[in-house]
Image (cartoon, rainbow, N blue to C red; front, side):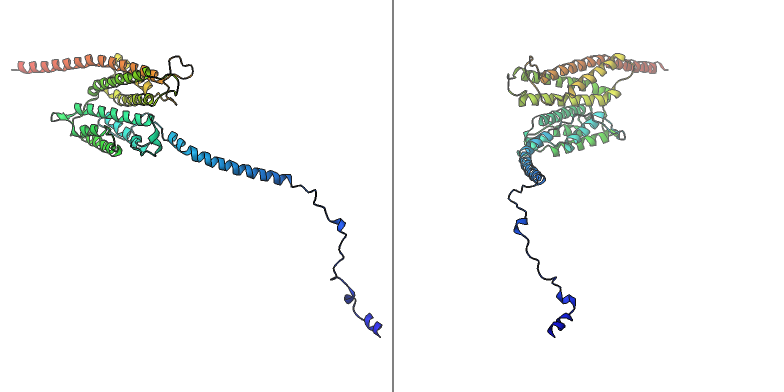
Length: 358
């Protein structure tokens, strides 16, 4: 009976699918005693360690070199030609050049001499000398125009004020002074364009400013000569005094060239070929001196093989500019005297004709 009952059970009850299978032979497990890491992973690990080391070294180098790099980047001397927009109308070209020159220094590097001691520009030598020479040259040129545009027997008040403001005062911020000087120059030019101020003629300005430029060249050549004679053998290519003398002379040459170029087209007529040739020589000579811009100023001995003497080169260019300027003055003065004599004779003829009338 029991056997018959067991046979009647469905076959599903006789299956043993939930019974765990017997364990395999332990000898079939893979042995890891001689396993090695993947070469690809080893390469990734080495690359990561190298990248981290490079980043650390780069951060340290950036932290150490950031300040010197800022010093180099802030030492830019902008000696490009000054372009006056065609839509602007100026009564006196020299005033336009002065205003745009001031704006360039304020909008560009800023005034280096007024920087605090921690600022990168406080470590510079070339840029402060360039800006100081520029302000000094503009001040003297504006003073010259003020003498040629008197009001009631005295120099024009706006021009005289601008000349004083363009003069550096130790310890006093220069930006407010330059801004006020530009405003005074603009007031004068506005009054001159409306006939409310005396407007000096270009040919009247030319001879006086050429004499001023020649004086700059003479003074700068003397300063450069002193530095050349005082040079020390060996050491750095140039001292701070050498660099300052070079860039101060360069600033004077740049202002002289820009002022002359702005005025030359209106000062001469096409009738005198000798004067025109001499004027071209003057402009070229001042341009050569103004465009000198070595990467490192050198004041080495004359027998130096690799490094030239930039101070001697600048002194030579200034000598050429001075001689060309004085030669042009000599050519212009007789022409001016002839014009005065001719005007006097015409006036005398007119007076005689009036007397002869019944």
